[in-house]
Amino acid sequence: MKNIKRYYTINTNPRDVYNALTNKTIIEIWTGEDAEMETVPDSKFSLWEGSISGINLEFEENKKIVQQWFFEGQKEESIVTIILHPHKKGTSVELHHSNIPDEAYENISEGWDEDYFGSLNELFI
Image 1: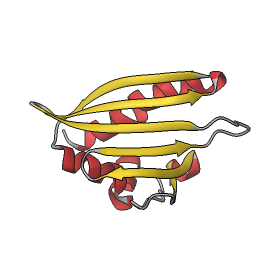
Image 2 (image 1 turned 135 degrees about the horizontal axis):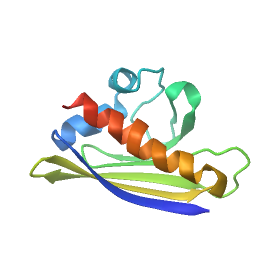
Image 3 (image 1 turned 30 degrees about the vertical axis):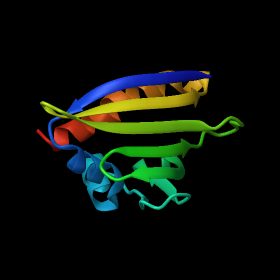
Image 4 (image 1 turned 90 degrees about the vertical axis):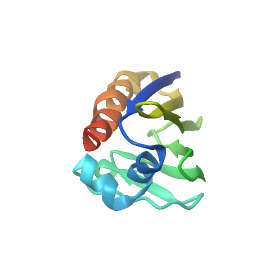
């Protein structure tokens, strides 16, 4: 199992980033795929037409999102924590992703940089 800790800068305020990460319609705009999302703890979520799925654990409006991501056959919980900080260029995003299966690490690592935060950043250019 591996962990990721990264920082990204998004060129808009934390409220807009939070909304883009939690609003189903906006998620579908920047991913270009169907999504299932609601800001209710213990609700299921699905992104990229089910390529990513799990359970929403915690929300702190405009500040923090905590999710459990599912990996087939995995027994340990894979937890994603996204923390939003105001930044002089918009928002600093602090990402923590724990217990990533070794065989999925490279794909997940590239996905965070390119598909997830790369696509999100393009939304606010």
